[in-house]
Image 1: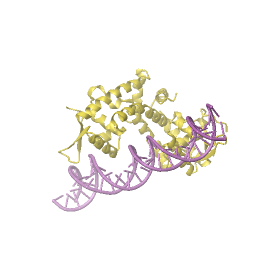
Image 2: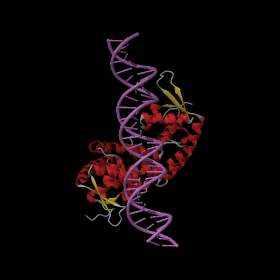
Image 3: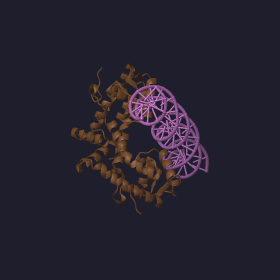
Image 4: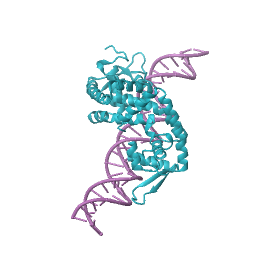
Amino acid sequence: MTQDKSAKKDDFDLQEFLPYLLNRAAEESSLEFQQVYKDRYGMLRTEWRVLFHLGNYGEMTAKEIGERAKIHKTKVSRAVSKLEQRRYLARNRDTSDRRVEQLTLTSAGQTVYRDLRLVAEAYDSKLAGLFSRDEAELLRKMLRRLAHMN
Amino acid sequence: MTQDKSAKKDDFDLQEFLPYLLNRAAEESSLEFQQVYKDRYGMLRTEWRVLFHLGNYGEMTAKEIGERAKIHKTKVSRAVSKLEQRRYLARNRDTSDRRVEQLTLTSAGQTVYRDLRLVAEAYDSKLAGLFSRDEAELLRKMLRRLAHMN
DNA sequence: GCTTGTTAGTTACAAAATCAACTATTACTC
DNA sequence: GAGTAATAGTTGATTTTGTAACTAACAAGC
């Protein structure tokens, strides 16, 4: 039963398992950006995602955000409330269907969005810079495929 | 303010942002495997990871597992307790340093591990099958780089 | 060998995620 | 148009995670 930690029994290596690798890479690569939106604005992951969706695509409903980002509606609902409390977004009842709320960023929200977007752009460049241009492009393509975002 | 949902303002597209893409791909690609360890064995993510570390590398301490998998010690501690309750692993006080516990899978734990490992192997092949052999290899390499697992 | 610091692991409390049930509104069917 | 089903979004209860403080054992310095 001699066992050194780099050897693998039987032909399976956890460290090669794609879901594991993807999770590790995702967690690691989220850390640095998380520090920023957390420390600078006290935001949670779902909150910046909602903020970015509105900043990026303009007016959307909670449902649309949830579908596009694959976030459960209760999480979206709570993130929207938080962002509204902080006056980063405003809700507008849809007149043609009063169950629906159209969400938009306030100008305060847009300011935050623009600030974080700069950070995101710089960070993305840094990460992509680990690879050649072609490799980075291929990586994104493969990730989209895995995420069913084609 | 015309806005269609595929257009991007100002040159930044959330859907191209690597941390976002990585998270989406990681979540999506974890789902199917999660169903199995959850439904079949009522296990949590940290629990299968601990189980796999022990199955894959043999005897380890909680600390070693935490370091290798980048899991916080409280999470490891709780996962170990759960796995012990279910008789999937056994603890052995290290005689030379009585703070330390050497962890090993019981034979029940090994059985579970072997079962899940088969599922993992098949699933990994399925995911890798979305790409050419070279692409899949490159993907793993890039993910390791991003996760600082070099 | 006694104080001080460090380490492995656990526990308690707060924050967040998950799941189910709920309200309000609209759509469908007869 | 009354009754039933479906939909957008919220709320509450439970589970899981994260943070900090804790215990027990060892290490180092004197």
